[in-house]
Image 1 (tube, rainbow, N blue to C red):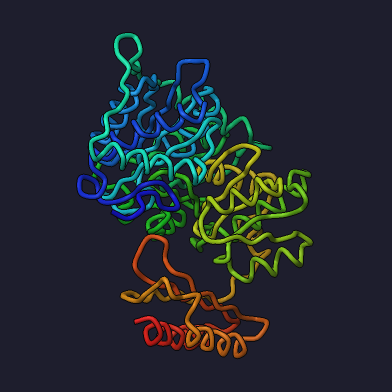
Image 2: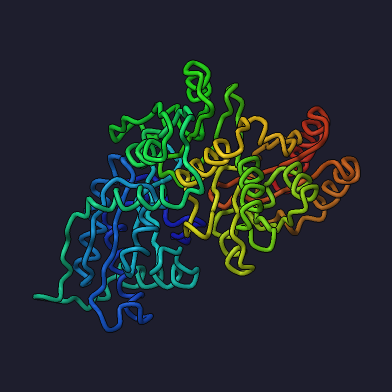
Length: 452
């Protein structure tokens, strides 16, 4: 069995890779590991458990709750809420552990388990490794030390968590959204109630699409991975902008009043300038990944904002933000972290802050996003190759060097193994799209030849 924990928890096809037995076992293991680490010392432990609307979340939630309670952890079951809501409530309620059941933007058959530590922060890698190790040890028959009588955990629903989270979102906005008409695409996901409610409370006129989850339609042709319906709705309703979330609402993409996409890099650029004006952009620095468009880096340099770069994954963005004491970071995919108000990417908060900037500035989102020019970017996934040799192949290193010489200062090459699939991603940026396509195609061929 390979490592269970990836860059964003444990994820796989529900009832095949991610079974009820696995969910229960990992939950018991997490409780024991945190107890061993002293997290529960001196008090009765509590966990917050939430999920997105996937049908499989119903039985997986039951398994997680059973596992935690059997290990002596009291459980607050918050129901269908976004991942950042579970993280926020874990911190706000002083819980020792948070658990979110979601596969984010993945298709409905998938699901996942993500654990949050006290304060609503992602678990450290070493704790995840320990949980996995303890789970594997007991999966093969080693008995658990189980509480009995009054020592078992108690379970109760915590419906008021939704209102607490919405109040938090609205309360941190720098200004209201009165006068804006906004279309929200909820991806038939976890934010289908809280996001429209938050935008409406903040003063916006709200139109919603993708807000009728049935357990089967999450991310299906809608949300941040399928912007077509949002583009059409914004234009049809004459809206000022549109906001799209993914299934667990930890990311946000947008479209302007013309229906043009505004990606995570552009959102970061807009928010960075807004936060600097309010003296909230600590060290005048924004954190982003190696996948950020070169146009974002050039725009930040032009505006006098420092760009700190990390590997791909919002957990690495968050690590760098904590290390440097920075306030803003994110990914091109729409994971945006505003560390003063959230411990993880929060798509609803990001959309609210973006809309607040439009309302406060009196400028369109299109105008605000024009601070950066996206350079043409071509991404090719190369399957069925040995991704472990990307960094050691001399043949591939030569091909990359030749490509970089051809592109010069106005282009960029990035080769990286996928963290979740057996393939290598080839990314090329250039001032000209045809050059980007040509270079990317040649590099993809080199990857196949060198690693196939």
